[in-house]
Image (cartoon, rainbow, N blue to C red):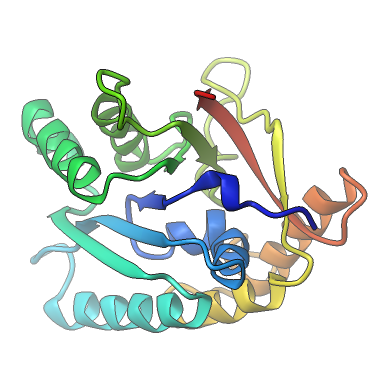
Length: 227
């Protein structure tokens, strides 16, 4: 596999804990293997009464374990309300993401896909794109959108934006770590044939890989590249 060092400092933005593993877990693990500085930002946190304090604490502990397993350098928590970003003012959401991008100064961003069915994913993408506007020399040079099982493929392709990948990252050597990281999210793992099952995640990686004559891959859409 060719080196990915040209990506520089990487920030993966996840609307909720586990999105970063579903969309980029194998890629993050590969970055860690290559010594690339990769951080994760989790935008939302569950809030009572919709989510119990006990459940939220458990999910955050699961995220911490998953991130340690795949080699995340640092995790940032924005603590905005989960499943309720549409109730956060656009100015406030944009400001939170702008502050994150300014403080972390990533060369490369990985974002959820704007066409995901979950409104939190859509709004996270839009706010991150506002934060990443190339208005100075230090703006992110590369932006990729990742796919999230049970989100990216459940909207209405042909009517809403469709995920059409044009970048594939070989995760043949890190697929098992991705799966182990997802297993850390005991509250989220489902039995096959649910899409959030280990078997389904493995199957998608194998299909994405085989389409590029690799044993396993994660697929992305290139949003912007500045060279």
